[in-house]
Image 1 (cartoon, rainbow, N blue to C red):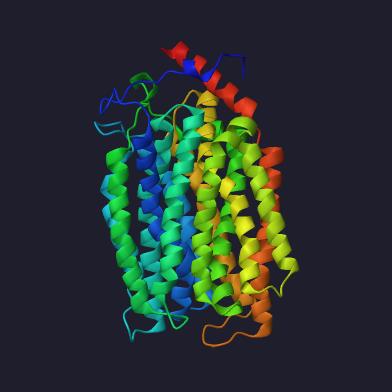
Image 2 (tube, rainbow, N blue to C red):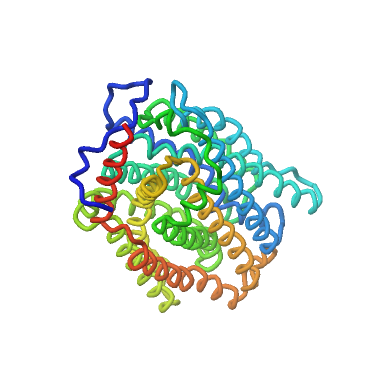
Length: 472
């Protein structure tokens, strides 16, 4: 990358005719926040409680549920890339290129989410297993049709790398608000006398479904797409050419590895924590407290993100937060006899640490989309984002399968009122040592292998602006 002056010279491709005069501002940030608010009502509900719903309500074995999660997430990964390529083949309309798909597909997505939590009493085990596979895979496929355009949209709302970091922060805040509601209120609805309740799960799905749909509509109304690819650059590109560019994109490759690994950790912890607090500590009420604290750590870290990123850079801020989290999980593993309150206190510091990674991850994605354009001259927001989402879905697949298989390995039996001591210790290890090791690996990847530090990110923006100027 050559030497060019600052960011203010970077032009938009074109102004979107929807609102060519309104500048990027708080309305866009709130609109983008509502998108992940809507996404995560069902995503977090499923990632946190669907395993226990299938094992304790449907009566499925943990290993079978793990297989379902593995198969479904691998299918979703393929669906992500397919939908991303489809989106990139569409022209922008009066309301933009990505927003219309959020509006169109959010309705069937919410319906499919509710269907997952319908329990028909008295059916055979085979019926419940088939029903779980069909409804879960359907929901995951429809989730791709909303999440891919939503995630891709960030790169066309604003061109400024700092403002994109703000969008990433607001997106994480939206997800955290959903997590706060689900992880605090959810256990109070879905568990009755510390046991999973079928009617409670359906009630939660209906409530969160309505809230999810309302958030999607807010995202559609408040967000504005500003950057539109010129007609001259819209010729159909062979996927082989795109793939060649992707393999040359080293920042993309390493952020894919880091994100996949983080998703393995995040999803595994989300699954195992339900069993940790329900069985090891015997308190689903404590699980609600953890949900509240997890959201609180996001909001506590949010005002620190912009000054830290401005001074040190995205990768430096994210990697140090992950290192702090890894150390705290290691400490929890080394102290197995902690009271639940002491455990939560240390866990709070860990959650505060990896909040920094969560808050900037989507800004990493917009950077690697820009780098793809710099390398290839192709603006393929949907495709690049779908490849990134592919890696996250593979991570979810691994975590879903790993969580179910690991619970089966340590001997979890839903038919027992009290699990064996070996099983309880195994659950504790899954909830502490495993995330410690995974987070340490993520630190190494982001800190030492991901190449776009603060200086190179700013230079990329300037170089890309120069290339765009030549095309005008």
